[in-house]
Length: 118
Image 1 (tube, rainbow, N blue to C red):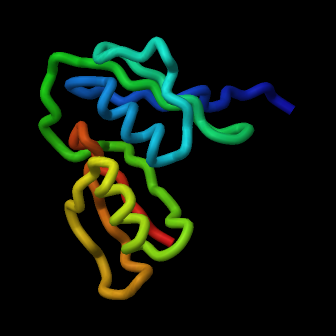
Image 2 (image 1 turned 180 degrees about the horizontal axis):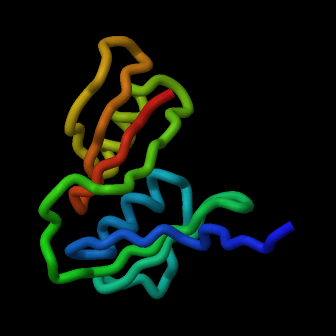
């Protein structure tokens, strides 16, 4: 069997790393590294084997839709999880469907898209 790579972390570019990392730590139940700053921030995944998240300040503005995004599985209903994420600083961009399982596209505090679904 060939030895392969694995995903160590996902890196997110943003204007200010600290508020975006703080949001994701709260959203996912991860730990925000105590040395995190506005230039670089690190969120350790909760549990064993999760992917860690790096956030780094970049000077270029976001100009288009993300080419890669996270899909979150709601632990209950999608509307309940969307409300929780809004209380942490996310905003709703679009809702696809009309029932409690409707896929919702959201933006984190840095404007990065992610989805909430069942």
